[in-house]
Every structure is written in structure tokens, then in C-alpha cells.
Length: 419
Ligand code: NDP
Image (cartoon, protein in one colour):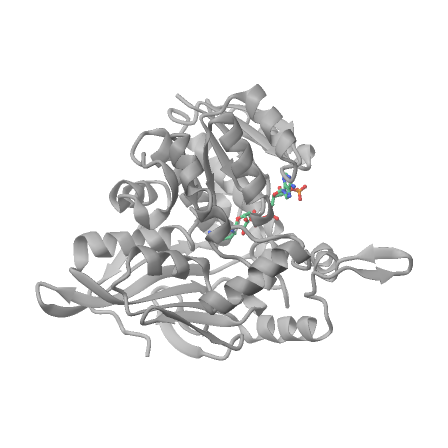
């Protein structure tokens, strides 16, 4: 029995909500709240008669702490699932603290306005101290650790696939496969084709900011930053085949370096097709990825927001995307004094996802772990108080839930390594 408030009703949230409704013995009551209430109403309507979960809807602007507090006070949830955008992480965490409710999200905080001087000053200091320049990092949310601990509450950060399941794979490898881990390579392959020359698989603004930023990895405890897309490898992915992949900065590198400090090198690679890269470079070169507002014919517009309005809605890609994703982690290290390698991954089929929840696999592979993370908190499998990332919890019940609810693991004890 539980009451859950989901904030956001986009591509990922829609999958998470549909999956929660499949587990109606745990998710007995659920409120979908977002900026545009009509989307919440449409989803609630489509779920009628398909679940025992009692679904209600509400309007909320989650940029405003007061509005979120008012909603939490009236709905009285056991858990708030933030599946809106990373921009709302801190306001929703503040509201959860005020109301005494557990919190979870799927991506770490980044500001919507990266020109804000107050934020910029802290950001530039961090770039110098830490050595990576991504706009997002964990420091903003880790700063809430003590407050959540003292309130006896849990905040679960980044519980999608990557971040999320990839960290559970790391915790699993550490618990069952290795005495010490030397290297981790996280490989995110999307072998899907939606037929458009250019579209993003999740929120275009967040996606393009991430992909156009410099890459970075961790070596011997230090960040090494490289120009965007400057390290390329080829890899033959199970069920997908040979793909080009590029080294990116990614948020879980930061928490893994803290929580598995013995690891000498942690890298993250993502596959991209040439058409995507050429379009992105061109859009970047002409200034369309900029977040700085410009004056256009008497209106102020933010170039990347305007671009978002032109691009296909990621939620609309479902029916036209074919192919599979393959996301996982390759480890090297030692067990009982012997060198070993281990690869754990999931393969997910875009069309199978569409048949089940009317979504492509990128939203599916994020929404299912969000539901499974909520399940861990609501059923008392994960109880540590404070602010935590996925690798800090027992991976076994979480991976069992993923096996059961649509993202089963595959393993390879003799994988090809990435050079
Ligand atoms: P979408 O853009 O599809 O959906 C975002 C939703 O949040 C929309 O319903 C939007 O409402 C709502 N929203 C935005 N601002 C507010 C606000 N101020 N108040 C209330 N609601 C708001 O994004 P996705 O579903 O693609 O992504 C959701 C999250 O998942 C993002 O944080 C993304 O970074 C993360 N993600 C994580 C991954 C992982 O593996 N960990 C992978 C992919 C995504 P409206 O309809 O009005 O715009």
C-alpha cells in the first residue's frame, strides 16, 4: 500500500507511471502532476480499466517550492518521484524536506540559466578544483546529505539506466565478481533507427547540452578532460553489431569514483551515428545550442528552446523506432588473486517497448529503473537515510526487479575489452 506523487509527465515519466500501474499491489495510489495538466489527464484516461492503482492528476510548477509543498501537503505521498527535468531537482528536494517525504530522481541537478552570475561563480570554482566543466555535478544535491539524514528521509539520486542501473551493475560486480576492480567502462549503445535525419531520444535540451560538452574520464583519482567527441572506439555489441562510440562525460563517473575509490580508470562511451554528429556540429556552429536568450523580431528567444520546438517530440518516436539498445559495464580487476574481466548489460528492443508501453527503448530503459527504485524504497529494501546514489544500495533486489519488470541482465565472463 503506498501513495506516490510523480512530478513530470514526459517520455520517461509516462513509462515509469505505466510500469508502476503494472505493480498495483505496491503502487496503490498515484498522483501524476506536471506543468501541463492536460498531458497528465490524457495518461490517466488511457490507464483507466487497465490497473487497480487509483490515479489522480494535478497541475504544478515545480520551479516553485511553495507550489510543490502545497501539493505534497494536500496529497500526502510516501514518496515523490521527480521525473521532470534536472532543473527542478533542488526545488523538489526542498519541498520534500519541508514536508518530510522521501525523494528520488533520474538525473542530477543542473541550472536552466547557466548565465546566472551567482551559479556561474560556484561553477567556475568547481571547474578549477575538480577538473571537469560539465554544467551538472553532484555537489548541489550532496549538499543536502545531512538535512535528509537529520530528517530521517532518503533521497535516491539518478535512478534511470545511466545513471542508475549502471551503478547497480558496479555494486553487483563489486559484491559478487571481484575482490578489487581496476577499470570500469560504461558502454551505452543505441542501435535504434527512427528514420529522421536528426532527433533526440530524450529531452533535446538536456541531451544536446550533455553530448556537445567536453568529454572526460577518471584516471588514478583525477579527471582528464578532452574536446567533445575526440576519443572514438568501435565495439561489436551483442544483438546490435559493430558501432562507433565516443567518450563522454557522464554523471555516474563522479559518484563511482567516490564510492568505489580503488578503481584506477572509469570511462563512459555512447554510440552515435554520423548523421546525428554532423547535424549537432552544424547546429552548435550556428549557435542553435546556446542557452543565452537573444532578441528576435521584438521577442526574446532561447536558441536551444526554439530548436526543441522544431525537433520531433521524443515521446513521438516510439512507433517509428526499430532496433535494439545495449547498455552495460565492462570491468577488469582481481578475484582470489587472479586477473579477470566481466561484462554485465541489458539488451532492449524498441518495438517490444512500444508494444508494451507505447514508448521507445530510451524512455523505457529509464522509466523501468525509476519504477524499480521506487519499489525498493516503498517495500523497505533500500532504507539508508540521507542522499544516496544507486551504487550505495544492495544491488541484488534491484537487479532482480529489473529482470522481472522488463530489463533482464546478460553476462559475459570473457568480454572483448575496449582499448
Ligand atoms: P521530457 O521533456 O519528455 O519531460 C519532462 C516533463 O517534465 C514534462 O512533462 C514537462 O512538462 C515537465 N516539466 C518541465 N518543467 C516543469 C516544471 N517546472 N514543473 C512541472 N513539470 C515540469 O523529458 P524526459 O521524460 O525525456 O526526461 C525526464 C528526465 O529523465 C530528465 O531529467 C532527463 O534528464 C532524465 N533522463 C535520465 C536518463 C537516465 O538514464 N538516468 C536517461 C534519459 C533521461 P511540460 O509537458 O509542460 O513540458
